[in-house]
Structure formats: structure tokens, C-alpha cells
Amino acid sequence: MFSKSLEPVKMIGGLSHTLISRTTEVVGDIHFSGELLIEGKVKGNIFALDDSDALIRVAEKGSVEGEICVPSAVINGVVQGDVHSSKHIELAAKAAVVGNVYYNLIEMVMGSEVNGNLMHVSANQTETKRIAAESKPADKKPLPFESVGFEET
Image (cartoon, rainbow, N blue to C red; front, side, top):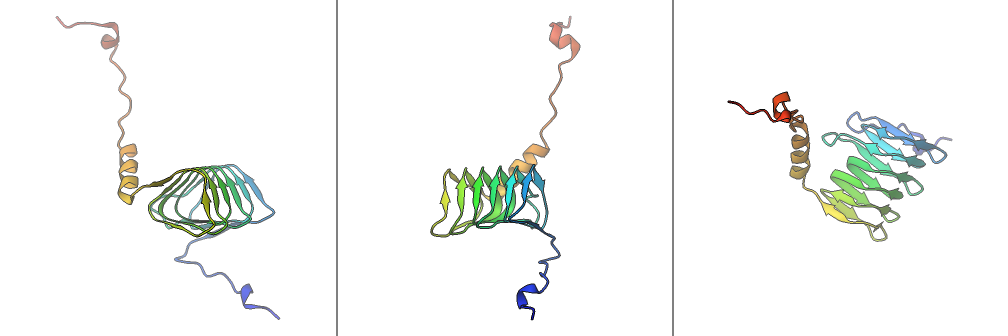
């Protein structure tokens, strides 16, 4: 009576799974960990930490209007915005990206399209940018006598 397709989904490495179904539209930014499967529409930016095992999947009927910044991505739907993938990105046969794709490792299947630039970014460059952003000094405020033009005598 029940088919094998009703078996519970096995979690990979204990990661959580989130589904945005075909009849759902999300307006706003999404920050996630684990796996995010988009079959509906997202109007907003999508983020996951670069050093995580997060994975986004945009299904054939799924669409994203906004920037995606994730370690790994599998796209088979429409993305209108830049895609940043620090580890791995796969563009499947029905993928259409209207924006730039920043990648470390990329797979493109015949039929996928990118209407923008493909920019290779090594893992070292991603780490260097993150460290530089974290160690950036706060803006130095001038001392009161420096702004007036005092001179020492």
C-alpha cells in the first residue's frame, strides 16, 4: 500500500532540512544551516556560513530574486541575482542565473545558462577576505587639537 518514497528522509551528518514548497512565497532574507530546498519563490537574499556544510537546492520550478551566499549550491531553477559559492556549485540542465556566479568549484550541465560573469574565487581568497573584514580597524577619530590645527611649541 505504501511506496518506498514515503520512507523518512535520512539526515546527512545530522543536518536539518528546510523546504519552501511550490505554493509558498517567502519575502525577506533567509539565514540557514543544513539543507534548504526551494520549490517555491523567494524574494530576498539567502545566506549560510562559508565554513558550514550548508547546501541550497533550487528546484526546477523554484525561483530566487536576490543574492545567494552559500558554501554549496545545486541550481535547477531561476536565480535573479549574484550567486556566491565558496565550496561547490552545480548548475543543472534547467538552471538560469541572471547575475554573476562566484565559485570555487563549478559543474555546469548542458542546457544551463548564466547571464552574467563566471568568477573563480579560490578558498584561500574567501578566507583572506573574511579575515581582512574581521581585523579591519575602527575609523580613527581626530584629536580635538588636530582638527583645529594646533601646533606644539
